[in-house]
Amino acid sequence: MRISELLRKDGVTLSLEVFPPKTSEKYTETAAAALKIAALKPAFMSVTYGAGGGTGEFTASIAAEIQNQFGVPTLAHLTCVSSDRAHVRRMLETYREKGIENLLALRGDLPPDGRISTDYRYAVDLIRDIRENGDFCLGGACYPEGHIECAHKAEDLTHLKEKVDAGLDFLTTQLFFNNDVFYNFMYRAREKGILVPVIAGIMPITNARLLSRSAAMSGTDVPQRFRAIVDCFGGSPAAMKQAGIIYAAEQIIDLLANGIRHIHVYTMNKPDVAAGIMSALSGIL
Image 1: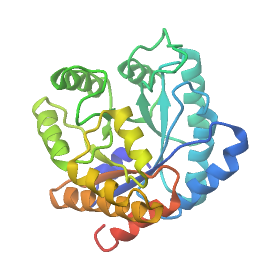
Image 2 (image 1 turned 30 degrees about the horizontal axis):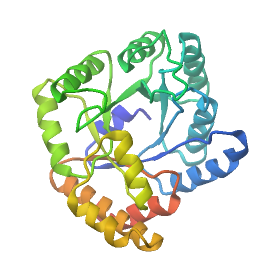
Image 3 (image 1 turned 180 degrees about the horizontal axis):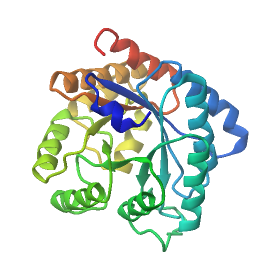
Image 4 (image 1 turned 180 degrees about the vertical axis):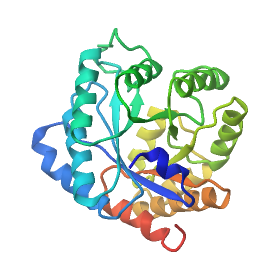
């Protein structure tokens, strides 16, 4: 099923995300974790893709397994920062062959070796290329606090409008820990004429190291309330996991109470965390 169709239906959607292994030796273990998460029956599942394109085949295979075994629609990522047009064409054909009709088009993180594609400079270039070469339901990323490489939020919104106008069906946000940031972003985006559905991205922080890494990579502000939780419970893995699940669940409940119907959870290949979120929201969704 196309995600755009899911988002048009009445009711709430909760989607979950997994990432593929970096090597074939880890494939079985990673696929097993992804299938455990799929067994929770989210509205759909997102499967990420390495910026350099090295995990593309794993992304396609895991996404296809999820669909075939559990009937859960999948959203396969596709990045272009280090890809040429020939590689993108091959991946589009692979996705078509495996019955994957939903793609998330991304530039991807800049690779450490500095090798950048000359065919694609920004995600909007990839979006246009996919639109010209396949009938996919197409999503893109957005950044409630502004892209870390963009100096001004207004400029970031201008670039986002360009991506939507290039043919996106929906958007998914980068993680955020303060819902007021998201509400403010939604107001500014709608004022800019960005009218496609926006899925709110939530990441349960289950250990202190994950918080530091995630905040540094995304430029996400961490509220003092959450820093206090990490300071208090970060020394105990079990306590921090439960506190992180509860904080994320409270964020989701607040979003739902304020009319946000579509939530995406970055579950980091952790079936227990995904199950904890689903359990905390049982009777609400």
